[in-house]
Amino acid sequence: MPATTLPPWAIELKNPPPYKPKSSIPDPPGYPSSQPSNSKKDKKTAPKRDPPSPEEMDTLKLKKAWEVALAPIKSLPMTAIMMYMSGNSLQIFSIMMIVMAFKNPILGILGTNQAFERFETETNKGKVLQVKLVYVVMQIVALALGVWKVNGMGLLPTTRSDWLAWEAQREPVEFAVPGL
Image 1 (tube, one colour):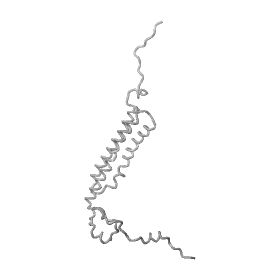
Image 2: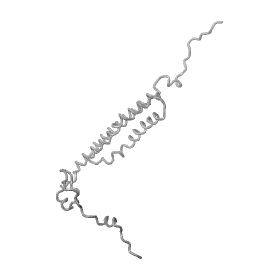
Image 3: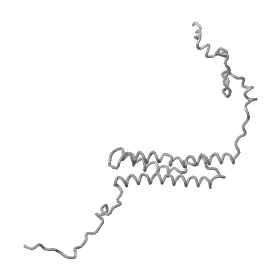
Image 4: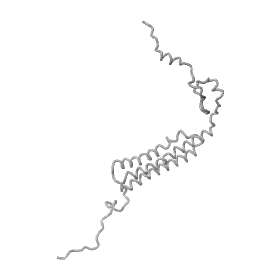
């Protein structure tokens, strides 16, 4: 069998040509040179970062937990505008909006512990509990927006005429008989 020779592009992939600067213009300040650098130099010049202390980690985790807790309220204005623009009639779009307005907050409330378990440590349990309560309140506000939409569509039984089936019929005190 004849020995197979590699094509030139494969040889260049294994052994890349040395770096040749394209121009004599230096890189701007703050931008690294595009030349491959010596790894020993980088290790000497790069400042070493100490790992964060447990207190700093708790602070960072608490910040991230607050971001998660306030996320539902950030999408509320857009949801409110979409619900307002969809109108009060029964259409497929408004029905889908209502389903999403109820489904997302309910799933959010049910998944509260799972959403915050990565932020909870032994030292910050009390603070994360406050964040969880704010998260649940934000989900309830989002749920109230869905209730507002359902009420605007007339699907909530809030008037007396909605409950006529359960009212007793009045007994008349007098009867009128037409004369012939």
